Image (cartoon, rainbow, N blue to C red; front, side):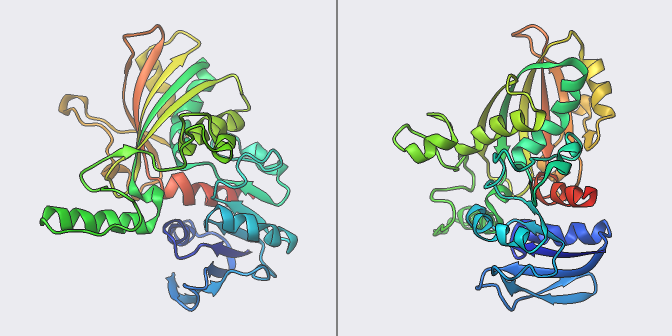
Length: 340
């Protein structure tokens, strides 16, 4: 039995932590909910009890065995070392620790062995990386991969609970012909789409250049750099173009994979059907493939529409959909905690 704290308990991922811990009967001795001073005092129901949210402070971790953190990179940077100092193990869902060479970056279906290397902190990968790599890794093992091209179609859930609510309210307002004042996304999101709104490097900022090459946004570079770290293969060529779409929950990705070993669509499906965390969903005769509404609230990453790329040799396309809040965030972190 473990004493667990959730940092960022009132956010979208924090709330999903609670649902998943309950669903999976995680062996809890106690549960502490931590958030900003604005949320302190709020009561949240967990199973049959109400737990009062406490303000996250440096001394919040006394007696805590495990911290599930999803409160933002700057918060993790400031407070998670205090959790480690207090004797807890942190599974951090922010981007702050991911590329630190001292911190394992883990997807349990891919590199669970890296958990043992932790020095108090284990990083949870970016949601788009997780959703891409669950179907890609078994193909990497079976056939080898020379190159992956990913185009993502990312839901509001990736920008947090407030962005989801703003999209909902803006959609209603625009449908009714009413004005709407947005505060989270700086331009129209409902009935619109745009390149991902993470930091973009235009070559003018040295700070951004540390994170992503010129012309890339941070979300795209995360998918590339994190794949190299998780696979332990810096030679794997990966490229990504990330787009935010007006969907409430669950990210979609169009993947193009050039394999090293000759194969065919049937063999790829055979590998994917036995891949952990992956589920095939399609009805070819009805032109029916995975959609965000199919993946929302579900654990597996859904795959369909595997087909031959006619433009190059031994390359294949596939369509992938996964719940960003569950497997792309909270579920992956809880799975890490279970292995711990």
